[in-house]
Length: 100
Image 1: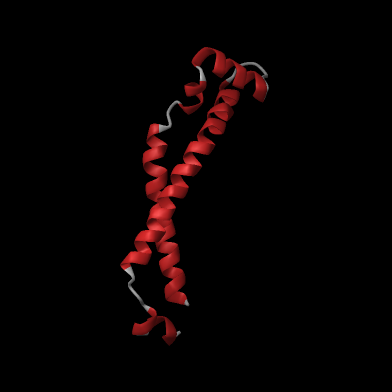
Image 2 (image 1 turned 60 degrees about the vertical axis):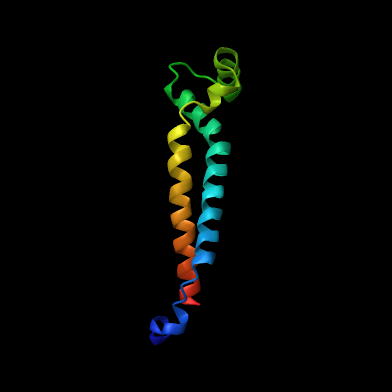
């Protein structure tokens, strides 16, 4: 256990941590942009009063709202998910380096 508390294992490399955090932000934004349309379809299927299929919901959304309809409400997740992922990636990689 003394290995974890030695001075040489607790490296503070700000450049590396920033790279990890930027990577986490990019991953979070990509995840939000690619996953949000599927989540929108899922929510619309759950809120539908009749039995509908994936294809029917997609066609209805496209005809009534256009392509932008799949991305409604994405502003908030697009702000928060990359922020959360940047902290998670940074902390995880820093912890990995500290533990060897």
